[in-house]
Length: 64
Image (cartoon, rainbow, N blue to C red; front, side, top):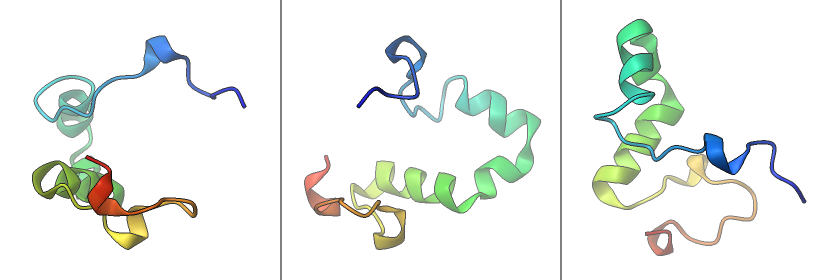
């Protein structure tokens, strides 16, 4: 199944670089979003919340 996003458009989720810093600066609500908070928590802890997983996700602890 083809992806809806071109590989050349993918970016690492780095909270110190664009596009994260651009979104955070222009839209203060961005960093208050549940999905963004969950992603940031995952970066700090290595654990994925159950509600942040999609249906076929195996386990949060094995995703690092």
